[in-house]
Length: 58
Image (cartoon, rainbow, N blue to C red):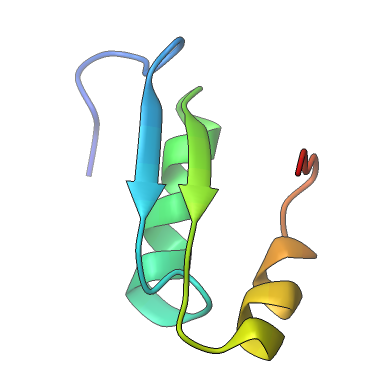
């Protein structure tokens, strides 16, 4: 799927982002230039998801 414009300067919150579709969406938003915050119910899964991003700022 192609996003018609870059998301530079935009902020997104992705819930359920520790795995699956949520994690995939978060990665795509980052690739398109958005600043992304992710959440999940399980802290362990969230910690693993954070490791999959190239740059993390907490």
